[in-house]
Length: 143
Image 1 (cartoon, helix red, strand yellow):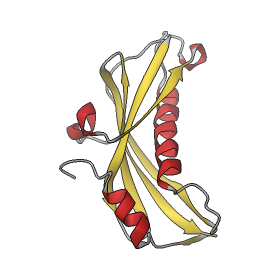
Image 2 (tube, rainbow, N blue to C red):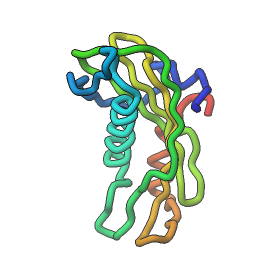
Image 3 (cartoon, helix red, strand yellow):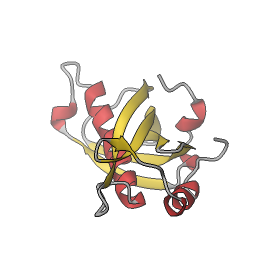
Image 4 (cartoon, one colour):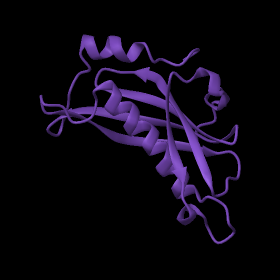
């Protein structure tokens, strides 16, 4: 579980996207279920990775998810939009950890840390200097 309360502060995030809360995202009690919230956070991560050049590249490298820890913080309901903030928590040799949070109607409903490994084929591939410099601009304050 991502217990770092700093991830719940919307002011720290340098990268934003949105997702739509769908009627089908609800459980039997009428709440947006946790699987849907994880899907929103995955949208945040993938949009960030694409924008940073970590989606599958022409040089054969790609970023894959190696782990995700999530804190579910508040109930959410259909309809509406979810605002998704993302930034970098840590940059390793061939991996990085991104922090992300989902906000609905001004409330942080979930926060997560997700580890992404950069691969070429099936082998970890180093994060080069240019990519590292680009990612460093998105490191979350205090991390």
